Image 1 (cartoon, rainbow, N blue to C red):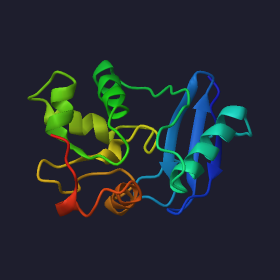
Image 2 (cartoon, one colour):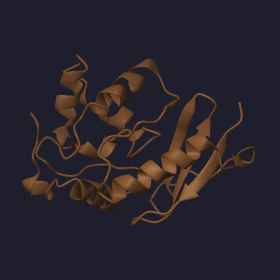
Image 3 (cartoon, rainbow, N blue to C red):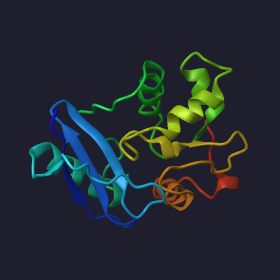
Image 4 (cartoon, one colour):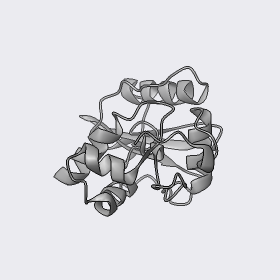
Length: 168
């Protein structure tokens, strides 16, 4: 299966967006702490899907977009897929705890497993893993770096960690 990619600018530096025929597979902050680099077999290409994804990401950063409408095709286990689907249901401008996310998927004692799945999310921003914080409202874990998570939450109007609106 061919992977195609593009890069788009953001206030947080360049973002890599990659897709396969079924939809987006990877989004990565290239200036983040754990960037995904294009594979040797990936092709830089201007496809309609990648164009739409880049436009929507720019719209998000401009404050004009609160929900993405893109085909997604992340690869992961059934549990990871369940967690990622639940992430997509967290409203813009809201932060919830890992424990709450675990309850939402019917696994109330699995907050650590939920955290691990959250950390493996290959589509940050579009699948809003940044909207999950510690039970006490503290920012914890983010593959791009906590400074990026803080920026995304601030962009959405979620205050400093101690002031975050937790939906419990």
